Length: 146
Image (cartoon, rainbow, N blue to C red; front, side):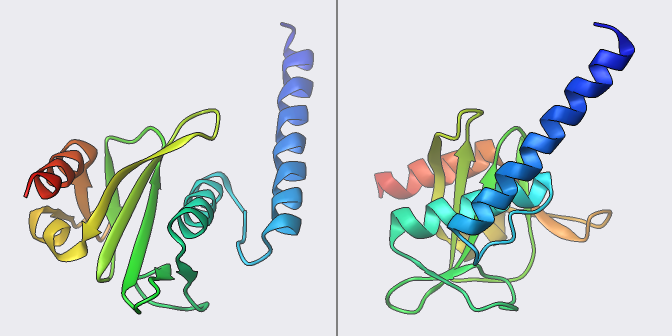
């Protein structure tokens, strides 16, 4: 592909992304739907809140994104390609979903935030706690076995 055509193709894709974000904001204005990282995070929060019947946390809530019907705080993380997730703050529960290229998603972990906190490591460089997806899957399976 010629350089000029390649640039035009990329511009078209970026324009499509921005148009899609505008449409997403119209459908669910309570989410920002901005930036590619935030786009994944907002999608994760949206589907988790809808699927699990959670209530979106008020703007400015520290350390959590949603509340259960009985008032427990839930931090929601969406993962696409990374081998680990990073998190800050504290909540009662942690919900992690994996999102495929086609928008399909699956639950990686939904359970005690404290258990994950205990098994995580701290990244000084990023100033947040980190845990591998592999470890989250193991914790989830171990919890279901008990």
